[in-house]
Length: 212
Image (cartoon, rainbow, N blue to C red; front, side, top):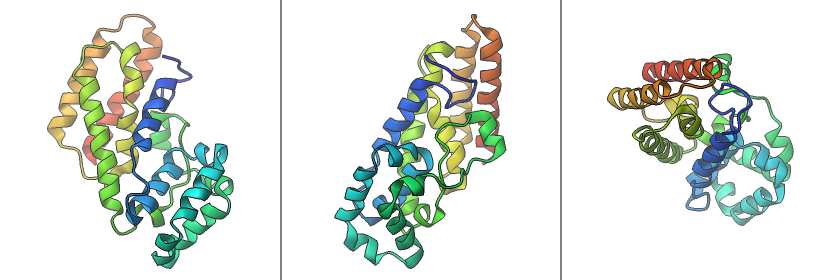
């Protein structure tokens, strides 16, 4: 695991997992998936708009009819992205300090609620939240140490950031995840100065997720 800090997003594998989760959003399924999906990508993967702006210009150009039918606030944001994806992605960061302490500074893009709360957007966000929960359940039922597990915990950060935009996570499920994490933590003996800091952030994430 390549690490640069103790945050949940502060390692290469976690960033890859996060990218895979977002790649699973079918942007061209319907207007809601386009708007909310672009909003989620802007929020969590803003760098992609700067590295491949043509991709997003072409995507939005293919669905000009959908964009034209949106309410004015949604339409204006999507038109601005289509005109200049790089500038759109360079907007104000959105992560509150309490989550930055847990997650680190990566994948902190502009949060455009006009896109995230579009009609049908709750379903799109719910789909992402379900994928996050399935991913965490799969990882935390396995026998792993923290070196192996840390890359798989990015979805916990996503659920935290989605907050009330996503359906709440069942307390019993969070308890199951915590037990799996505690097993991994107890089975990790080396570099405890680092892992103690990391584990403290993960445990705080569980507390916040339970609080809703």
